[in-house]
Image (cartoon, rainbow, N blue to C red; front, top):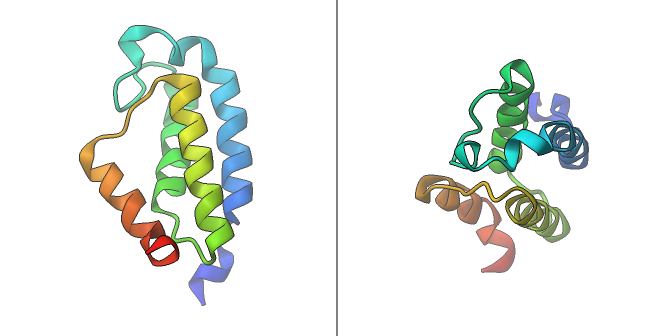
Amino acid sequence: MADDNRPQLANLISRHHSMVVLLAPSIREEPLRKNNLAGGGELSNEERRLRADIIAWPPKSTSEAREKLEYLARFVVATGVSFDAETHRVILESVAPFFG
């Protein structure tokens, strides 16, 4: 299966968290707090890629669904970055089977 080669959710979260810590000063600047981080060059590109991977991640269990939701909530609270309606839809649909 191709999915067996993907990194685990915990690994994605760890890598993303490290990236957010590196970018924290620029993330907190008001002009950058829109849906996508502006500036930051390759670091912000990597942050966006990792964030997109986490958002798209299909949880395999209730605990993984909870881990995904908790991490994304902590990210929003810590950075002030918001998600658009489509991103909310993707997140909710990915965890719905576990909280239905």
